Length: 164
Image (cartoon, rainbow, N blue to C red; front, side, top):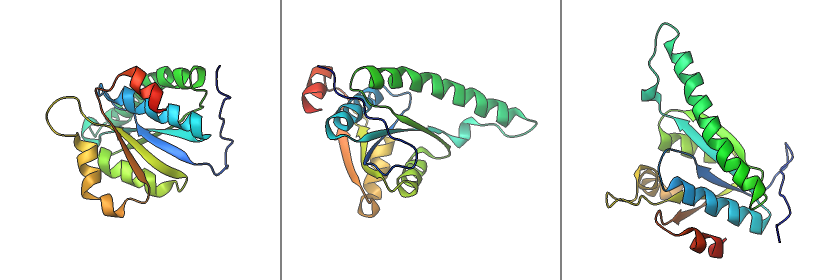
């Protein structure tokens, strides 16, 4: 049986799970977990994508073209996940795009939206540590005003569905 769709009308206060959309393999696990948990708790999902400032060359209109291209790529990537979230767990996600340092922008988004109650990140699958976002948040953990959930990057889809 498919769960009821959770739609967040504009201006409505609702608990949100914040998840980061990037090019990592493990990002998919964080998005799946956030959507499944949101559906089971009647919450919303906010998807944050950050365009790293160093990817944008400045001067002669090039920066605006690069921003537009990056945003198009992000929106196309987001639409794939958004379709799954709508069809499978029945959640209508919200996309937020920021530009700058990913960790700083993640913290800024948490501060900007008081409805964010859980940040969901996935640990890196390679043995190089947990990943830059988790490492950055761990340094600022005392100032974090919401819960942090770390999903193993290599966890199976079946296990995620059991946890959701």
